[in-house]
Image (cartoon, rainbow, N blue to C red):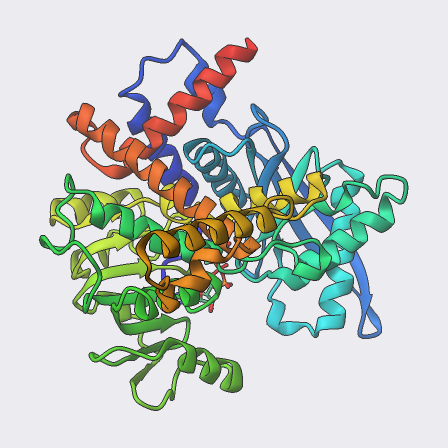
Amino acid sequence: MQAHSTGFLESVDQNFRHSISFLDLPEGLAERIIQCNSTYTVRFGVRLRGRMYSFIGWRSVHSEHSEPVKGGIRYAPNADAEEVEALAALMTLKCSLVDVPFGGSKGALKIDPREWNPQELERITRRFVQELNKRNLIGPGVNVPAPDVGTSEREMAWMVDEFRRANPTDVVNARACVTGKPLSKGGIAGRTEATGRGVQFAIQSYLRDPRTPGLNGQRDLKDASVVVQGFGNVGFHAAKFLSEEDNARVIAITESDGYVANPKGLSIESLKRHQRQTGSILGFPGATSAAGDMSGIELACDVLIPAATENAIHSENAGRIKAHLVVEAANGPVTFEADKILRSRGIIILPDLYVNAGGVVVSYFEWVKNLTHIPFGLMERRRRERRNQTIATALERMTGKQFPSDMRDEFLEGGAEIDLVRSGLEDVMRSTWARIADLIEERPELGDYRTAAYVASIRQIAQAYEAIGI
Ligand code: NAD
């Protein structure tokens, strides 16, 4: 992969500028929308292993046209302020596109989490939260972080706990200061899988739409070959759902130390177990391993899903990508230049701000759950069960036949939290796809799905700015 963030902010900026040429915005408004409002740099020390270690981190607030602002916190050794600003801008655009009421933010700590044990990471995380809290950069109504690369529900649990300690008189809504928490700490069922699940819904929405070319005319993923870059949270869940539920063949998974491949399809759960046990996907039985080989994303396939970090497909390797469809599960995996090369070669790209929005959508559900203090479905579950039971009984009496036993449980079930979350997420992903596809049908000059997604999103942010008169 290229130097990680070189040109990432520039790519977001170029996409933005290209898209506003299709919009008739009042003078000066485009600048206001794209500029990052503020980036706070924090340096702090933590005494560990008998000495003082210094850390540096950032929290960018890109836009407060809607509050609170929202965005993940990543732990990565190569994080920098520019990367964080690019990611924060994407959050603003993403939230607007999928219509969740947040402005965009993002944070990072320049750290390699593998170099520290869990106790040390906990102390570092808690110290980081103290710094963010001092500056009002964390809190249910101001700024709500979530997991990203290198962080997970474990870090979110530490963060919410530290926030509560620092704000002992504001405990009622404190849980809503962070999303992506474990269930026991106020999380929501389905948040960990949400981004990968959203990737699945995005591909399904694209394939089902008769206005798209599908996969050379194919309208589902049955037996379609898929390559996934990055076997972390997003890559694992996307690969799992596509192979187990849509019968796709995941023929290769790439990681930072090489890739594994099997043209018949990999067993995703077994590969995850192998990775957990050995620390690597390499050496997985039943697949060929290519240690140190970073060219896995260039394998011929129907669908390529970059789910690692930004700039994975750049001007040098774009000519060697052999997929029909590139699905951007990561943020910014295709540079502005590479995007042009891929499209000139007839490769279709589903853009990041749509594809990976599942995380922030379910984060929104979690935030609402924390603020309402009531689990989704609690009030109506039993009533719905009774109503469905009545319908089943009536049907049985009217027809004189038994309700099919294999459908009975599903029909009677009142709707657990996970079902409601998946249903809400699917609805958002489908309706957002319809908005993108309708726009490009109305205005074919937009030319590609990324531009259509940017235009749809910027148009809405512009309306918000105009409404508040700033
Ligand atoms: P993660 O840390 O769980 O996984 C990332 C994986 O990519 C790791 O396993 C890492 O080893 C691997 N990787 C790093 N460099 C690589 C390379 N050059 N080639 C192949 N693999 C490589 O992170 P994640 O949460 O899965 O996030 C992945 C991407 O999705 C990021 O761009 C992130 O911003 C984006 N994203 C995540 C979420 C979320 O909910 N976690 C939401 C929206 C977007």
